[in-house]
Amino acid sequence: MVRTAIPIRATNPDMRLILGLFSALLGALAGWSALAALVIALAGPDRDGGIAMGAFFDIGPIGGVVGLIAGIWLFVRFGLVRNATPQPPTETSDTTPHRTTQLSAPFALTVLLIAAILGYWGWYELIRSPYLSHGYMTLHIEFRLPAGMTLPDKAEDVHIEVEEATGYANANLPPNWRAHEGERKAIIASTSLTYKTRHRAVSLTLPGSPTQSWPIDLPSDPDPTPGFSPWRVAGDASPAKIEMHFRLSADH
Image (cartoon, rainbow, N blue to C red; front, top):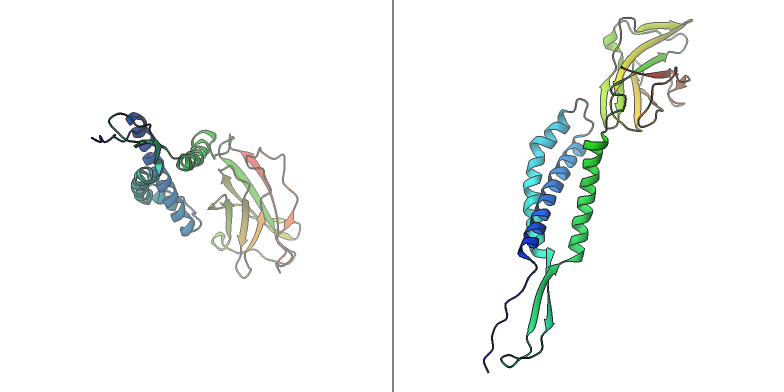
């Protein structure tokens, strides 16, 4: 009896091409973003944004190429599964498995999950925007020293750092940064807030004193405050009971 080979039927070639291209692009985006995020995390705090820019534009493309190759390989290896179903015998053949190729459900769910994560990231960065709705806003900070504590003679000896999200900025000292409240000395400073985040803090370092820090209690996307917040001590463990308060104003 003559046996004839039955060709393996697959899904629509156009659909396979679309799915394969989609998997490759997602792999490239995921690899690019993951490598850039890893470099930023390993590098630590970025005070001027240079690390983030270099990680995304200089190192990220390497991860994109690796992700592209991985996406294609994963699609070829796991994206399509072949199912064999028996066919009734005919006059010219015996019962022969009839193979069909279809998309793997676990692979499709994984691709959809990655697409959702990247889509959320794109929505946050490009549509929702991580920047404050009011634009750049000025954070006015005042520090009140304990009675008997003197101020440094030079502004260079005063180091005030404001942490916003994962970035840091040095506060500006105006010409009249040396102030007082009664017999207590005070320091006046200001800086700009830029990002929507719930994590903000300010630290003060003076010669001969340990660095002290205070949280900035503001909403993620704050409005200007009507006045200064209450005075707050850095912490009970700090030997120098320096107090801090702040207010927020819009630049426009």
